Length: 207
Ligand code: GAR
Image (cartoon, rainbow, N blue to C red):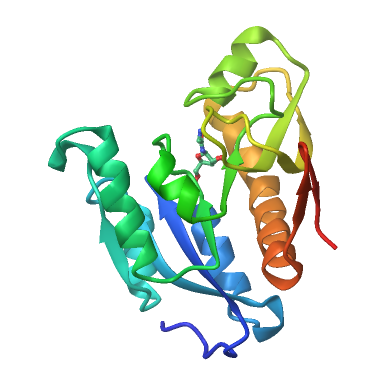
């Protein structure tokens, strides 16, 4: 089903994905309301076959794939990715389950928001949920943050806590995190799109 028409004032958002795309779906659904102020103008992936790409196609949203192995090195991949993102002239880029570290070419050209399934700065990286569970924390959660050149080190926009339950597996805990993560991401992206932000040291203010 194609997305609803969006007023010209809506912020243009490119979403980067690698997997299932439930966070992408939440953004697409929210963007059907013109008052939300977001238009998802493209979805990019680092691999073919990501389920998230199918979601985009179903909604008539343009997609692109930019794979590391198709480029000379990471720098060339990053430059190609920056070009493909830039072709859609986004106001904001959202990394929603995109499992690659973005480089200078992308980050110097775009404001990028990432969502991460842990309470940063605890448990950065690709295995955050399993790492938190293995550590034995009783509370974990999710974080939306601006992306900088580090691994999950950028200024924090929002965090929501999720209690760990006895008997949790990485899968069960991740599913509970993702339920609150989707609402957090929709809320943060909408506020950034409608109001912009200022950054003082590591403190982000959304007016
Ligand atoms: C989300 O939980 C996101 O935080 C995580 O991948 C999941 C994607 O779910 N990202 C990372 O772990 C990045 N380090 P989705 O494909 O259903 O939106």
